[in-house]
Image (cartoon, rainbow, N blue to C red; front, side, top):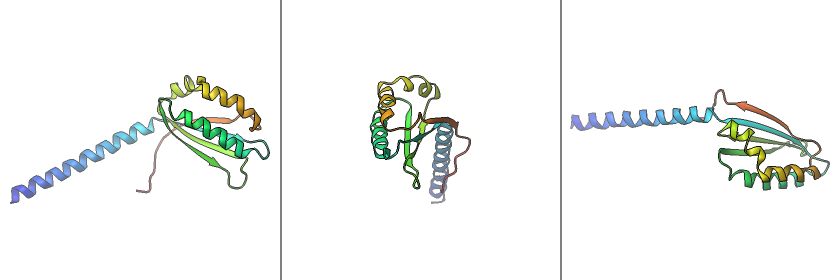
Length: 133
């Protein structure tokens, strides 16, 4: 009986240790991702057109290799301010092949109808991540 309890205890600690190591590895991997902030300013009364155009673009971008996620934000006080928070698995891909995709080139052409100016783009690396849990 004592041997069974000891084995179960050892296995439990082993499984918890493996899970923690896996979470740490995933966290380190995610910290290598490129974060891109893209700020858009729409023409007056064109924010709905901009959101529709960005949504269409993002549906295509999601199919690209190295895509992790994109969150589209709208300023609650001024809907002509739009922010994309993008996460990519490979900086070289983002700055190279992604920028050459047909869907992005088409968006840049089409966006002249609803964007006031070219977007402001900045790139970031994750230093630390803090979660609620």
